[in-house]
Amino acid sequence: MESPTARALMAYEAVQGSPGITADRLAERLGGISARAARRYIAILREAGIPIESVRGPYGGYRVGRGARPAPLLFTQEEALGLVMAVLDGHHAAGDSGDPVGSALGKIVRVLPEALGARVEAVRRTAAPAPDPAAARPDPHLTSALVQACAGNLRVRLSYRSEAGKEWDTEADPWAIVVRHGRWYLLCHSYSSGARRAYRIDRVTAVEILTATFRPPDDLDPVAVLDEHLASGWEYRAEILIEAPPGDVAGRVGPSLGSIRPGPDPGTTLLTGTTSSPYWYAQQLTAVPVPYRILGGPEVCEAARHIAERLLAATRPEPDHRTEPAHPD
Image (cartoon, rainbow, N blue to C red):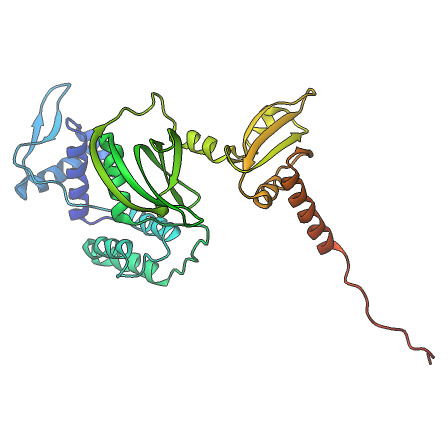
């Protein structure tokens, strides 16, 4: 149960966030207490020197008057623990005070009430999250600059290093930043290539914000555009005939595998895409819960055959190397 002080702060937060809130609505926000009790917390705030004004009438309610300070940051136990769990889930160094995320989380813990802070710190110190080997966390300073450029529709000059080690500079219009499967992508228009690109932010080595502005595409859906981009333009093609109608396939085949359309026969779906890793693509296909055939893409077909042979080998019984005695007793 919250202390009277915590309840009063929650009341302050509710009034500040919903000007004109009535005593009845405030009572609901405070956990279903009585309207009389809600008015008592308003009185506590006024006694503390916080200017809470009230307006009578059918459209009246409480609001914060002029000269009020911002409400202190206040977390419930569930909010604080949920925040720590989310950070630990996505950032394995959150318990390290030398890490920027760990340092920031430590500051939050230190301003929490003692009892709550102890519980949160216990979770932070005892949890042992395993690092995601596929995750690639970019530099916070460079990411902050890109976020600023996206928010202000400002062109940037990027220095980039590819996976193969090739380096180049380009100017780009940064449309959006998308986090997908532990990787951060900058979705943008690249002027060096004259086309849409999705750059891995962990491979960006320098950012310069320019003065030129741009207008992002109308009705931009960054996640959908990124998935479409990641499924096209790669070295190896794939064409898959799935024995199910498109309506059943859409929710079971990720957009990163390609696009789907009705197949040549009723009740079938044709999946077409490209990939830089045929083995990864074939692995993803094993999760499709209906029959399918690989029609195009010899590299993907060979990878699928290799995976199938490994799975079959794993199911064969271990050969019995024992030999029978030449002259049994």
